[in-house]
Amino acid sequence: MDKFTQILTPVGDSIYLSALVALIPIVYYLVALAVFKMKGWLTGLTTLILAIILAVIFFKMPVGFAVASTFHGITYGILPIGWIILMSVFLYKMTVKTGHFNIIRDSVTSLTDDRRIQALLIAFSFSSFLEGSAGFGAPVAISAALLVGLGFKPLYAAGIALVANTAPVAFGAVGIPITAVNGIGTYSNGNPITALEISAMVGNQLPILAVIVPFYVVFIMAGFKKTLEILPVILVSGISFAVAEYVSAVYLGPDLPAILASLVSLLATVILLKFWQPKTTWKFKDEVEDAVKVEKPKHSAKDIVTAWSPFVVLIATICIWTLKPVKAFFATFVTTINVPLIHKNIISSMSGKEVAAVYKLDIIGATGTSILVAAIIAKFIIKLSWSDMGKVFVETFNEIKIALLTICFVVGFAYVMNASGMTNTLGSALAATGKAFVFFSSALGWIGVFITGSDTSSNLLFTKLQEVTANGVGMNPLLAVAANASGGVAGKMISPQSIAVAAAAVGLVGKESELLKYTFKHSIVILLIISAIVAAQSTGLLSWMVPVHP
Image 1 (cartoon, rainbow, N blue to C red):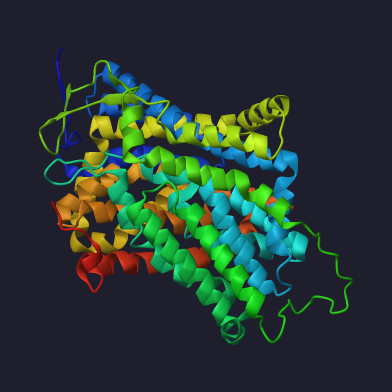
Image 2: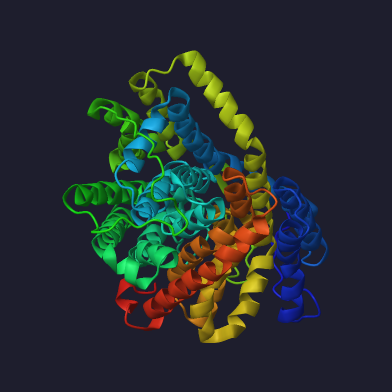
């Protein structure tokens, strides 16, 4: 069988003209989604088709190779990515079905009347827990709705929820944004960049942001002076989150950092509030002082423990699934499939080596399966019948099936971009920015999440591009790949999908532009902070955080 050799400069023998052609699908995706507001699944499908056409016509990729690459990406979008998302949302909805989620909510919201602290508990810590366990729009929607229920104005509640939900995004939905790009990028010596390595590197970036975000959220709410009044809460909330996120990301991997960090942050903040309260209770200026207070629900310790137990079980099952002996046992059930046509039949335009195209069918060892096991165990704890459990599963699938389809198309598109060599061409052109790319690498992730609404999709789109460009400018490719994931968290708050979810949750449909106007400036600030961290890690005071370049 004839092999396909990727062409770096297929258009006019010019890297820049070729890069412009390779950029067309990305620009189309941005315009179709953000400007013409095309539905996500349709945008993904048409972008995939456009990428295939350009790959065949300009980059001379055989049609069969393009189709094979597409299906390779789609199958990966189904398992493990789609499987994790489906099971995560399923477990969350089980707690909603049984009413235990209301107890979880009440256990968080009954601690204080101070609006600043409520924002930290709900929009930062609690939202992070939802991001880590379910993700997929649920964190912003639920936390925004909770804030409205407490008396926050809808626009303000949605804006605060979007800004606060940043530090955990790279580890959302049980770490899928990072596990999805395991092995896609490589070091200059050809060794793959693993999910564990990316997790550790992101774990040296986002904890710094986690310390800053609580202060920033309260500052934009109440100003500098009122922020200092609750500095003990801010420090405990942010630092406890950062320490837990760092330890779990560096030593345990990408699955649990957001979940563990949020739980530690919540617990530490709750303990502090038992012994310390601000001298004055801060509320919004236009709030009625003598408003009738709603009686707070009372729940027994047993009820609260039971309500939280599904997520405690989730942590336990994921930990078991990540143990080396267990992983080794599960590996015996893995079926390795060489993708027809394209396995070792594509020659990289960068390395000149054959590119392996392998799909690992790993159902038992998949993280999504560990979540399913947690859901089955939790079913007995929260007393959900098999019949109702089945109904919840069907409802969950019906609710997110279009989103799952969208992910499949986006992943297929990413695989075509990589297999055709279009990503290599873009990376080579972007490398012309030289050392400045160290600062701008985070912006690429920011753009990707703005476009796709997902750190997972952004990483799938740009991981290879980040790696190729980093190798071209002498930057550690691991740092660049991690910067994509970390920079993406700042794009989440301005993504059209996130804006739509938040607006719908608080009854602001039709006023999305106002919400975008509120969050955009904060998104830029967060992006600049992350870019500065990455730059310092590459060449500055924080360079000790980055492993030696292989």
